[in-house]
Amino acid sequence: MTVATPSRSWLWDIPPSPQQKAGAVPALIPAILDDDTMLYWPHHLEQEADTMTLEQPVQTHRPVVMGQNGMVVSAHPLASQAGLRMLQEGGNAMDAAAATAATLNVVEPYMSGAGGLGVLLCYVARENRLRVLNFSGRAPYTATPGRFTLETREVGSRASLVPGNVAGWMTLLETYGSMHRGHVLTPAITYAEHGFPLSYNNHRYIYNHQPLLSRFPTTASIFLPHGEAPRAGTIFKQKALAQSLRAIADGGREAFYRGPLAKAIVTFLQTQDGLLTLDDFADYQAVWEEPIHTAYRGYDVYAPPPNSSGFQILETLSILNHIDVQALGYGTPAYLHLLMEAAKLSITDRIAYAGDPEHTPVPLDRLLAPAYAKAQLGRINWQQAARVIGERPAGETIADVIRPGIDPAYRDGLTTYLSTADREGNIVSLTQTLGTGFGGGLVMGDTGIFLNNMCWWFEIDTASDHPNCVAPGKRVDFCVSPIQAFQNGAFNLSIGTPGSYGILQTTVQMLVNLLDFGMTIQEALELPRFRYFEDRRVEMEDRFPAAVRQEIAALGHQIDAIGDWSPSVGGGQGIFHEPGSGVYQGGADPRRDGYAVGF
Image (cartoon, rainbow, N blue to C red; front, side, top):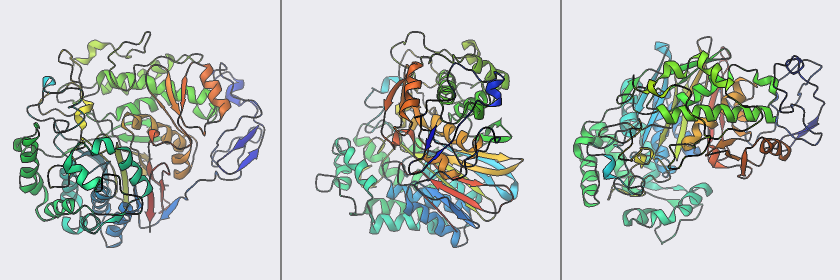
């Protein structure tokens, strides 16, 4: 069998594993493929001499970045450097996270910003405590299903929840930061005021969104200054945004939620038939919460609680925890079929139960119970792909679609990721978003700020009793979910990705790469990924070998090839720390502009 990586290959023979010989692994999908089958395999996985040993590492497109004193990983090199600057100047991981998050507003303006939302995990070393900070926004007080159409919940002045990011940044700094907010925001203000060179990805995103951006004069004047997207390498300035960030640096949360920025945004929205009011802004607070978790092969894996959808990740891991994934073999049809089917079962539960727990309880005690996970595993048909409704409630019924595993009566009782670590052992894992690219597409007057379009994630059917149906002051089913993993009580891993509902599938694949197959952080981020949609349709990167995709298709999966490297399956970053090593290892996904930096 020939085994290949992007630029290197080895030759070996793979006999059946002991588990396969014992019948523990379903024999319905061949674990040993034809001689021309190509698979990726991480260099850390070593089995007994009569099976396989890989002596050379997988060639990655980027190196694993090492650092003893600190690490920053984010979706843009300038943002990562902004966070690293805080660490090198004596700041902690919380200062670095806020600096990185604010700089992403400038250098990746289509993914997140002051008008966006987010959630973070914060491990506080001196407290030996992991906390969640939820700043995912709330629906306007006047938001009811009848106030939205399919278009207005996605584009323009009505699409936004109350922005939460500024509350998140400021609350993090006020609670655990060591630097003044003005210093932390200086890199973002500087890049907005004096400009930064647009990357090729920057240009591509602006170019691809020209139809949206051209609809609104306040937006087009900044992003389409000559009627078209600026070229890569252009020094791109956002002076209005610089002024807004400077106001936040001077006045903190008060400036954004009760002061001049709140008034400017609401006044502009009133001219555009928007819903947000000064009361919506003035009442908003970021909230500290407790994480949820599951045990997985000796690790404790943590995610934010609902309204985050992170429980889908944990439920999928709980299902996988009841089978020896290594015995199936990385990248085999059996392995991929298992991951796809487990994801579909978890997706179905997330659609049925996810929402704001202040309005509808989410039955986490059932969904994350080991017995339930084992029962879910028993529902998988190893010979046939199941039908799934899709990533959210569908308007049309698909015949024989998977149903939730819990009795329904029980229901009564475009994004960016960053992570920072410092010499004291503090870790921040933060995901923030505008919703889709450029949010609602509308820059708020002369503030330079996009608002999010997270109302698109609410259901607006006036006859629906779905837990994620829009209501005044409600929090949306928030598909973002940064992850941290601990081993024997010590921090081991921080990882996350953008990608809408795909976040909840991509994150599982990255975690399995790391926790089951011992890959390096960079290998785990780079290897090919898939994303399931409606019915039996799955997007797969072309780097999955053709023979493997053929075997998958034979099981009924309807494959859409999406190229070798597709942002559809995310753009993750991560920090790995082997307990006791004293060294952080950072990785960043080449599918986007992500970069890891450390010192």
